[in-house]
Length: 286
Length: 261
Image (tube, rainbow over all chains, first blue to last red; front, side):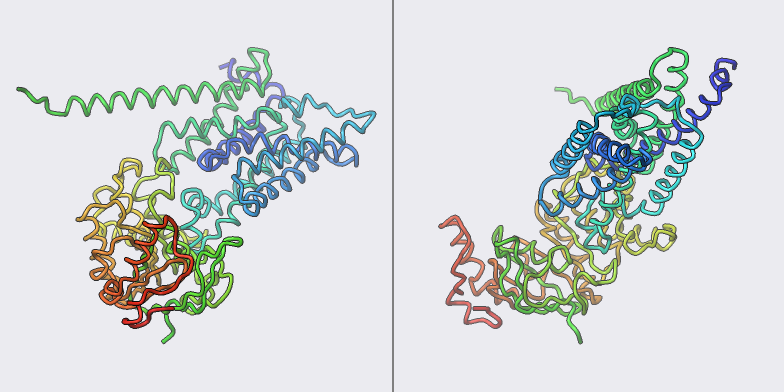
């Protein structure tokens, strides 16, 4: 029992746990839509784009996360606009916008002679450094996004499966697409603090991809993905504590292991189903 | 009485390309209208314009008495071709048909008893009740088509649009779908359906429209088929490898009512 409670004798570990749980559950819940809409690239894209916001915030002496959030949301809206108006695929739109925003960040940074932001923490995250004020922002944003997901649930589901028919029925597929992109942007910003820009994309994709292996209904996939996000956060944090490794990387490694376990379970199930069909088929004799 | 659909000199463009040029027609409540024409003739475009998915570039289009984009949510049910969605999506037959109820529900409304009853009724009508719990990837093409029709029926629409729902389905499924649609029409629902199947148009429709990027003929199925309007454009496409660009009506068209020059 001591093994379970020992890490949380330190207040920073308790804050890290709450932040990881919020981020893990939120990213993986949102990931259900990201995976089903084939937008695996978007987490990585928006995360990189937000770098420009961090640099701009640094230049203006503003809060880095606020800067990142503003640029991330603008990039998300821009991705939707370019996709719809430019008649290009969403992936192409993401590629155009995120590289542009990221390049803007690099350009602005290159003009700063005394740039001192700890980029390492934004790229790879440092969940153990989460302060009480950061935690409040993370939990607050997580609650806002979770409420939005609940309110938009049916519309997001229908427009994810069949946007054309949903639109014909009176559900504004375009508005839902923009709303989803903004929610993804906010989720990415929340995730950057804990797992960093490089790894946030994994939490948006891997838990949902794992859940997809185990169910053929949306609601259980949504619930399973959120559950996988939660246990990855908790498990990864414990592992990082005892293995003395990077917490962000350990959380993502944990979820990757979960994915392959789910893939294995699916393969075993399929083999069993095939055997059942084979056995129940009559054997014709000459 | 205001028609369910009223189009006057309707023009639809995709950029510079004119997909439908100056189409004029009305659809009454309790009437079924078939739309035939070769690939690229504007059948799907017309359905999408009526559904409010594609804007009119010129002319008038009123659906259920208003602009198509101002129609009350849940009023128009559109049945697309089955290739339009990813059938590996995590959903059962019941889940997909349930989506038909979503346009009618505000976010604070639960999926209630009346909604479940509407879904069950729709499934029973297309004879898919026994497959309600099956994953949609495990369905045949004809069963997938019936799921789409059931979703539209569960919506309890005021206008039904079907885009080639009988393509690739067996005769029994085609017959079952036709019975369902005819029953709805008899109960006052207006229906527009794009089809390639000229052999059954008399059983399906009260009126038939021939499109070739403009409206070439409209009238009873018997008259329109007899006019040769469709046969002539089909032959032209076959011989020349492209759609008619002159749009001059075939001589025989003039023998029949509502043949459009």
